[in-house]
Every structure is written in C-alpha cells, then in structure tokens.
Image (cartoon, rainbow over all chains, first blue to last red; front, side, top):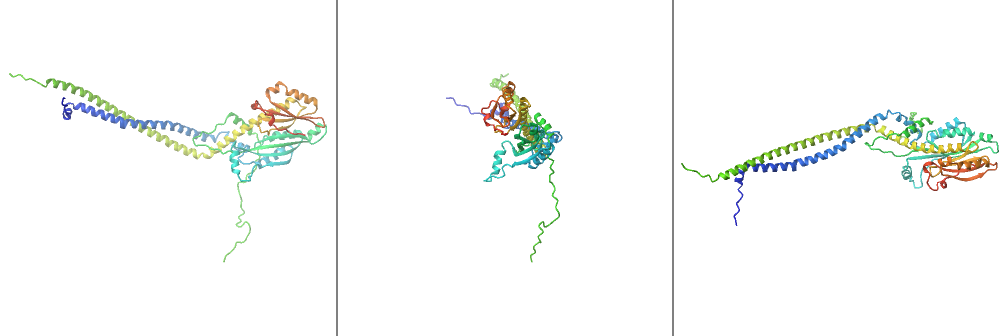
Length: 262
Length: 199
C-alpha cells in the first residue's frame, strides 16, 4: 500500500499562488452572484412589476381628474336640473300635482276623482327598511301611482294626454279608457263631453349609487343624449322651495311665563 | 572545469508552465469578477432608479387622489345624473314602442274605429292592450280583415283578440293584446294581458 502524501498547503501557496488567488476570486464571484446580484435582481423585477401596475393607475386617475374638471362645463351636465326634475330622488307628489294642474288648465280639461296610492309607508312588522333594500334596489326606481278621471272634449283630452307624457316628474299612462258621458247616436255631442279614466305612474329614483375613486366617469351614449334633448321640452312644476326659515325673534313660542324658583 | 547536473530542471520547467497557466486563469477570474461587479452595480442602479420612479408615481397618485376627492360633490352629482339619464332612456324606449304601436293601430283601422282604451299595466311590460270601438258590424268586419293583413302580421305577429261586445246602440268593442316586437316568440303572452272595460 502506498503512503499518501499529505497536502502541503504551504507549498501550494508558494508555488501556485495565482491559482489560489483565481480560486478565491471564483468563490467571491459566486458569492457576489448568489448573495448580491440575484436578490437585487429579484427586487428589481418586483419593483418593475409594481411600477407597471401603478403607472396605468396613475394615467387613469389623471384622466379622471381631467374629465372631472371638464365635466362641469359640458352642455349635458348643465342640464342636470332638468334630469333631476324628470326623475327626482324623492317622491314627487307636490311636483306631480302642480304639473297636472298646469297641463289641465292649458288643455281646458277638468280633473275629477283624483285618487292617490302613496306606496308602502309602514308594514305591520315595521320591516320597511328591509322592503326597500329588497324591492327598490332591484332596478333603483319606485313609482307613485295615481288614478283620475278627466272630463272635457275629445280634442282637449287628447291634448291633455299628450302633455301628460311631457311633464316632470316623468309620468307614463298605464291604463286609459275613454267614454262619452252622453248617451245616444250623436257622435259630435258625444265627443264634446268625454270622460277619460286614467291611471298613471310617476317615477322617482331610489338607487344607491356607489363609485370608487379610480372608476372612470360614465359616458353618455347617443341614445341618452337624445333623451336629454327630449327632456328639454318637458314642463316642470317650478315649485318654490322653502330654504329659509325666518323667525320672529320670539324666545318663548308658547307665551308661558318663566317659572321662578326661590 | 566541473560539470553540474540539474536534477530539478524538468520540474522547474513544468512548474513555470503551470504557473503561466495559473496566471492566465487568474487573469480570467479577475475579468470575470470585474464583470460580475459591473453587473451588480448595474442591477443595483436599476433597482434604485425603479425605487425612485415608483415613489414618484405613488406620490403623484396621492396628489391626484387628493384633487379628485376635492371634486367629490361634482362626481357624485354627475354619476347620479348619468344613472338617472340611463333609467330615463330605458323608459323612453319602452314608451316609444308603445306609442308607436298605438299610432300604428289608430291609423291602420281608419277614422271609423276609435281606440277607446289602452292598458300598459300588464305584468309583462312588453304587452300593450287596446280596446277598439267600431260603430257597426261592417266596420268591425273590416277590423278583423285588417288584423289578418300581412302588413300588420309583419310588424306585430302576436296579437290576441278577446272580449268582443255589442252595446245597445250597436257599437262593437274588441280588446286586442299586442306583443311588442322585442318580446315576440314568448309563449302565453296574450293570457297575461288585462282587458280595459270601456262599457
């Protein structure tokens, strides 16, 4: 058996110093790749990916900001009052009555037997909130149902019916029946004294609208712009809104003398 | 003159050769290390650049968000405005279909026939019911012929006739349930309509 020579490190360092340095350089290079370049590169890739996500988000936000700044001056948004009148966010009872009164006067017809269905006010178990959450959120619209009899000549009733579908709040005729109040074969006489039994639905907006800060603003389609033009010809009630309460400077509204304690 | 014998001459030569090779390898390794270090610097530079850019983008986002939030009222008003307009355009569309049907039938039956009742209140929103009134049986016969006319069938293929009555004065009334074009093809449409009693 041959005796193995012990590794003479000193001799290796003396004779093959450059190889030793090369090996050390190789180890350093490997360490640099493993512990510095790879983690840095991973970090760089993650940053790049994050930047790729954040940049379009910034573009969207900037675009939205520009839209928001411009939208105030668009002719469409300037008509928001007309749209709010046509589809108010509250039950438009007074507005409807006022509009009906003005179109009835303009058409020379008389409204009789006005009947109102105000909708659900409260349920037995006071589950009104649940009702609204369930029913109204379906399409975001609730209706105020009204039935009435309209008396007048056939032509005037026709004018009234045409005008009825051009009032704010947006009202549609759901049922209509025309009868003459005069019996007999005289059609001219019959046409002069007609009775129209009507039921109408006035719509109002109940939808809860939500939006995120990054969501783009909705764009109005051509169809919606046409509707806007059509709404411009609608007649609204112009009811004055009570915004100011003027007090009389009374301290004691009931005129009761103050109680003095001794 | 004495001659000398160099016993390590060959070994020296081999060692020199090996050392030359070692030097070459060392030089290569130095170059490799320098290259790797440059790559390291480049990668680190890129990382710092991206950190800076990301910070700039996020700062800009925060600024823009703040400005957008300051326009919150306008955004809210506009979104509600757009939603309302969307709903209104649907209502207008439905109403237009019904009005067109009413005009179509009023015109096609002629002046002798009066549309004395309309019912839009069907559970099925795309069905409209009319009550028509004819002064005598001959006009009513003409109404039936008109209802079979191809022009009517093309526009409104699904029409249900019901409740024909005759009054004491000889007038005839008839209820028609018309399915508006979008809903044509659905079964039992006529059965869900309500009749308008004009008597």
